[in-house]
Image: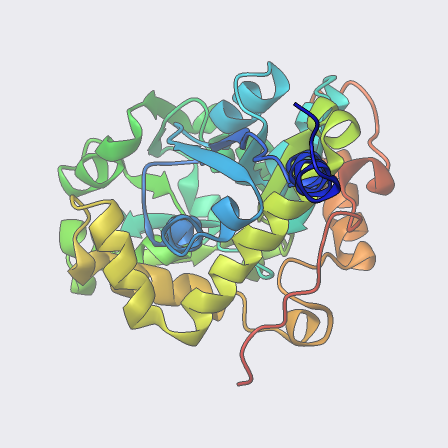
Length: 335
C-alpha cells in the first residue's frame, strides 16, 4: 500500500525527533576520601549530596572515612579514591616522596593545627613537650608533621614518646591520662572540653609558634586531573557550593548533616563546625571565592616544610603543590 505524503512526513519527523533527543548519560562515579570520621569539618559535602549539587552535575559521589591525612592521601595516590581531603602540609612531603597528587582547593584558609593537653601536665609551650607522651594514629597529619614543628621550636624529638591509637581514642587517651598531649585541630574544642573538662583543657595552636600554613585542602590524583578534568571541576564547584550554604545557614546545614549521619552529636558538632567556619571568614575568600589559594602563602607553606621537615628526599617546588585551575568562583555570603 502506498503511503500518503502526510504519513511519510510524520514518520520522518518521528525518526528525526528520536535521533535528536538527548540520551541520558550515566553518572560519573567519584570516590571522595575524607580525612577523618564525620565531623563538622565535613558538613558541606553532605549538604552538597542532599541538595543535589553533585547529582545535577552528573556525579555519583561516595564519601569515605579515613584515619588521618596520611590515609586519605594513600587512597588517592593508589587509585582507591579519586579525590581526597588532607592537610596541605602532609601533602607536600608526600609529593617529595613521589605521590602523584596536587591540591586543587583550600578549605580552611587559616590553619587549625594544634596540640591539646591538660593543665596538670604543666605543658604551656612547645619545649615543655620534652619528656612527655603524645598519642595519635600513625597516619595523623600532625604526627607526621611534628618533626618539622619540633625542629622549628627547638624540641629534642628523642625526648618525646609517641603512643599509637585509633582516631576515636584521642579524647580517651588524654582524659584517662594515657598521654600527656594529643595533636588535633582547634575545631575539635567541643569534643575536648567534653572529654577533659573546659577548666582543665589547654591548647597550643601551631600558628602561634611559627607554623602559620595552609591546612585542610581538597586534592586529586594526577590521573583524575589529566583524565577527568571536567569531573574534577564539577566536583570542586559543587563542594564549595555546599560550603557556601553552610556559611549562609549553619542551622539548615546541621539538620541535613544529622539526617545523613544520624550518629553525630549535634551538641558537639555545631560548635565544632562553627569553629571551622571562623577559619574561612577571610578577605582572601571574600575577594576570590571559597577555596582560592594564594600563591605567596602556599609558597611560604612549602618552604617551611622543605626547610624543617626531616628526611625530605628532595625540595618541592611551590607550583608542584597546588593549582587554582579547577576552581569556579563561589562567593561566600556577605558578612
